[in-house]
Length: 261
Image (cartoon, rainbow, N blue to C red; front, side, top):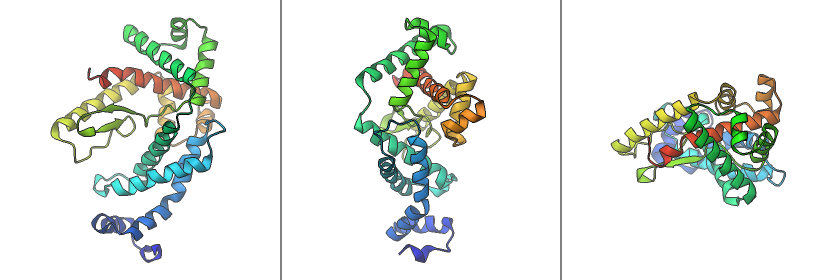
């Protein structure tokens, strides 16, 4: 059934699908972008515990691909591949969170680190160093870095986390903050613009290495291992930097989540 669409441009196919929602066109897109699901699942799988199966990640990602096909708007002038990667990754993380396999003790420690970072950086007016965070948590730097590595290897911290819910059930993740659904009312659109400003500001205040890790991982699509080669450090160190960057962002944005700009 999908063979009849071969030879047509993707632009033509999207126009057809937006008008007719022909399932054969949808199936063509699913077949065309199935390798993308495996690619994203492979990236997510790196650093995951052994009890998380790759095939399960692929299965979770397929739901994201279907969602992307249904919601993609070609008039936004964003490549479908770029849009789909976000939806696929988000779907995988959503399913992993629903399993809730993270030990309670690790979850509590993660919250403790975030609270400490938020308190310190609010008082200091800048990014807190590992030494300062460790001291505030009554541990040495080695213990703190070991804790961060443990958190990064057992919990799911991602820019795909939904960190803000506005009116009209409008949920915003950091990495998707550039989207502006037409269903939003003018007040909500203005609100989103302010949120984007806060996000950009929060990212700009990150330590340089953490900022580089986020850019290389989310926007250059490198794996943690590849980023390690680029920056000349181990994969576990990159994992630590990624985790700290996400925790810093979530800490900085907590006040926004509570409605305090």
